[in-house]
Length: 584
Image (cartoon, rainbow, N blue to C red):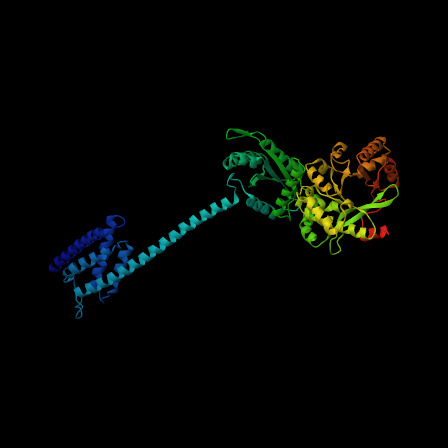
């Protein structure tokens, strides 16, 4: 009976200890879950601790496991360990001293000693688990942070990718996106698949931007893009904005070039109504370059290059659109290669004059020669005549140094012939660009001085447009040197005899086309030429007929009163040594 009462007292004391333990844990910090569940868990842990105190053989390591379980129950505030040690060390010895039968402990192995050893291991387990939980929480936080930043990075990369592949002003796919789209189409293209693309240049955007500012220019581009989106949606086209005022429509299907031209026409119609910008009504024009080809085996850059080339042709030809043609493209590339090679060729002395004799028709004697440029290319390549490179030289500005070189070579050769007893007129063509140079007269005078050719033995041939243009003062400066001036290819331009009468012109060369009209036995052609020759003679102007290829032509122009003749009938252009041999 006494044992039963003692056991009941112990049980009541342990229950009270568990409640005090719960209160202490709650005061120490947050207790997760329902309070009843926490109470039950602490009761179980207390029972385990008591069992460990009474257990035989005694195992203090059980305290370590209890400390770990406290942390696992998320009762891991540092004060929890202190509350536990204080309560257990203070009250359990009294409660367990006579708490039930057990073998007599070994010396030094009494209940208080066991409680302290278990508490020591409990604290060790608690702090170890607490440290592990902190590390785990830090790792989890680190993982969460990495996941978060990975998501942020992915989002930023996606935004950057979108920014890199879209134009800011319009939000449309840009040139890079178009290249990507074309590449994907090419990668899956089957033999026979075709594709079309029209490159649209919206004329007037730059002018509006200059006049009303960049913001209004961007607004116009956005409005243009909105209208083109409607065109693309209606036709099923892919629309891209390549930057500035250029847009592209990609047309899939087998409709051929006509279908792509139709897409360009739809875009032109859509953009034809005026755009209201900043209180103004602004109209734009559209020029299109069209390319349509098989898709397989091509490259995105090739499509863009060909479309740009076709757009350039449309601008050059002053047309609304131009369709890419491989033959014309190859001709353009050939001209570009020539233009790129010309500066080095000039430096190497590859440009030389050939000479075509000018015959006096009255006695068939050689009165002079015309210097005609030839490009003698190395490595066995055929020589090029002026028609193949003079236009390129004028476009690039190389005509100035080239013309100066040819003039000096011709004057030097003329002086050499003169020393050999051949007093020839040296006729050299002068480009309108050269005629625009302010120091031209001084330059020509210097060449004459250095080469030793008398000024009156040099004739400079100018075009009709130069004769009627803005360089009359320059012509007078040249004439003042004592040299001769002749209008070349008369009858193909705008010069009139009335204009010539006011210029210091001493020669006129009738165009070969005008001379060729005499072959038709046209009385009108003969009358025109006769009156021209008579008026020139009245003005003291010597007349040369170009393009004499038959004896019949020679007789006709001679009968009409021409002074000089030039053409294949007499001689083709030749190097100076052949002319020297002909002179005898």
